[in-house]
Length: 103
Image (tube, rainbow, N blue to C red):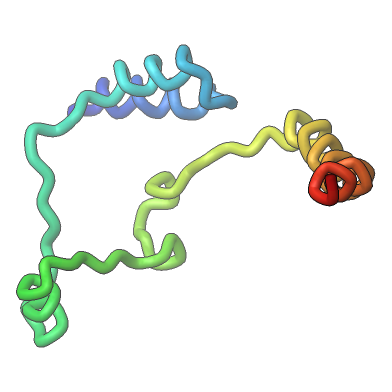
């Protein structure tokens, strides 16, 4: 990706605030998929064992060198009504659930 591509990607990324189909399509258009992926790592007993076992291990986000590798956005204002509805369904509606189970 050249500088213009990175700038386009960054502008799209910083202006997205949901995971709607439109937003996903905008992000996909701004970041073309690579033809191949590779992972460089040192040769060690553990890395050879991983190859032998056909397993991959990944670092947690705390060890990534790019903060946008794990970027996601949570719209708190949108989540509050959903959280309240879940609480109501679980706790207030508990009697309804128990009545249905006992029938």
